[in-house]
Every structure is written in structure tokens, then in C-alpha cells.
Amino acid sequence: MNILNDEIINDLIKNEPDIKGCKFKKMLEHSSCDIAINNVIQKPSDNSIIFNVNKNYILKIQKEPKLNEIIYQIKASKEGLSPVIHEVYECKIGDKIKSYAFIMDELDISALEYILDKNKELSSKIDVLKQIIKKLTKLNEIGIRHNDSLLRNFMLKSGVIYIIDFDQSLDIKESLYRNDFNMLHNDLIDELCPEGICNNNDIELLKDLLQTLTGYTNEKTPSLKRIPKSIEEQEEEKKELEERQKRIEKEKEKEIEDKKEMERHVQRKIKNIFDTYNITTKDEYEEKCKFVNKAVEKLKKKEEYKNIDINEEIEKAVRLHLIS
Image (cartoon, rainbow, N blue to C red; front, top):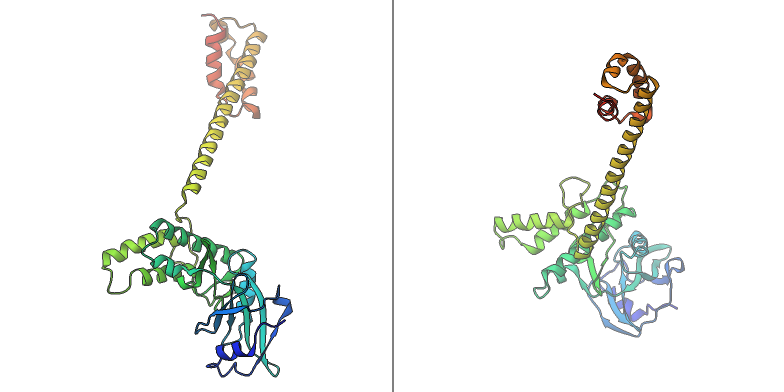
């Protein structure tokens, strides 16, 4: 069932002569359900409408046919990075595709509106920025460069960030792209500190904050190691650090005990050498030192004793086992 009636279409594309007159047909391979319009809530000017069934959806009609925008968003939505696309339509005049249209869930507010809202807590704005960075990072990991990562292209729904508008997106392997993180950084500077509003000191402080938040770099590949951690992440990291420290201490204790046991083992070996040559006094040890040395050299060559100072153990054995 097509939900796109002529009245809605004509109203949306009346100023788009290239699209006017084409017929929209559902593309079943990209559609997951049937949605019927109950009532139109809003008709924005950018070729999209918001309509209501049991929840709000957005119908977007492209001014130019860009199937890649839909493909990239579908791929991103499977990872929870963008709104789910429920239905996709193509619009043809003859055999030529003039436009695509798709239906997705409506979101609440753009990240730009949220961050510029003076009533919002700074900590919650930072959390939004951190979500954006993590979503962008994941988007890059699944092989997509958004290529238009401005604040207005991130939307919130129930506190969760979603990425929208993939019309400029490219495969990660493409060389002709703009760095997503640098673009986000520059857009934050432009929006939070417009030219003529902030002095140089304000701008430098803001840049430092944003570099920490966005992982901004002049290099092609951004570094994300400086993203601030939440309280939960900090506590988890602290717990892991404490547990790792305990493991290290136990390993050190075991290493010390193993070495002591090996030293005791070497002492028994040396005592056996003394007994073999009937050495009971230090004078007898001096007299038969060359025989002892030959036996000791054999000990030194054994792999199991490589971490033991045999000479030191000989001196200890003389003190422990021989009479002055």
C-alpha cells in the first residue's frame, strides 16, 4: 500500500520542476513495513513532512536521486547509529529515476539546539558530545565517512544520539572526504563562539575543551584517546586498575617465592657437593676448592639456574654449612 498521495506529493515538490510529474513506487527490497498516514502534523520547507500514526514518522523526498544516502543510513541503523528507514520509494519519469523518498522515525531535537539551550546542564551537553564522538567513531569503523558531521546532523531521541542526513557520505576508502572529527570541532567553534562574540582567550579555552572532547587533530586520522570518561567509566576503570594491581602483586609474590625455592634447591645441591668431597670445614673447602669449582661450573650451565647467582649461593653455603 502506497502512503504517498498526490496531494502530499504535489505540495512537497511544487517548487522542484525536476521531480514534478514523477510517480512514486515502493521499493520492496528496502522496505520493512506498511505505514499509512493518519494525519500530517507539519510540512517543513525542505521536502519533508512529519506525520502521525501511533507515533511520529518523517517522510523525506530527495530533490536529487541519491540511493547511497538510503543505503548508508540503513547500514548505520543496523548498528543503532541512525534512525531506522521503514519504507523506501523511487520516483521515475519514464525509465529515468528522478528522486527517492523514505520514511523513518521522527526524532526529538538536534544536538545543535540542545547544546545552545542555556537551560541544559553543562554536564549533559558534554555527554551529548561524547555520544556524538562515539557514534562517529563507530560509523567510521563500519566503513562510512559521514562527510557532513555538523551539529544539526545529530538528533536526540529519549537522550540517545542518532546520525542523520547521509546524502554526502562516502565509503571509508574514498580519498575525497572531509575529516568527520575536524569538521565537528570547527562547527562547534563556529556555533558556540561566533566571530566577534568571543575574544582570543575565550576561543583558545574553547578550542582546548573541544580538542579534549572531539579528539580533534590536524592529522588525517583523529586521536580519540582524550575523550573524557563518565563517572561510571571512571569507577569501572578504577576497579580494573585495582584488580590489575592485585594480580601484579600476586605475580611478584609468586616470583619471589619461586626464586627462594630455587635458591633452597641450589643450596641442597651445593651441600651435596660438600658431602661428596667430605668437606666439613672452611679450611677443607679451601684445599679442595678446585674440585668444588668444577662441580659448581656444571650448576652454572643448567638453564633452570640462569636467574640464580651461583657464586653468591656458594658464599652463603660456606657460611651455613662449614665450620670455621
